[in-house]
Image (cartoon, rainbow, N blue to C red):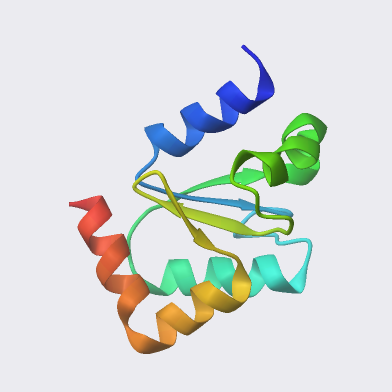
Length: 104
């Protein structure tokens, strides 16, 4: 399976997934940390991929949805965005609604 197919499978198999540097419990960058905290505050489980542990995903994820930075949050197969967009949605209450709907 090629790397873009692997990424696509991860995105489609998980209602909520974050591609981040590190893990939610041990983030390796501030943007990933804040984004994972916002997702955790929504109170539902979500998948995560540590891009630092998979060089192929790290190199190719920006091509998948034409988004150049990490982290990347996908809900129901759709790119929501990175840190700034996710935090803004969290502050407005939109992120929690989307996460809860995806988990239902």
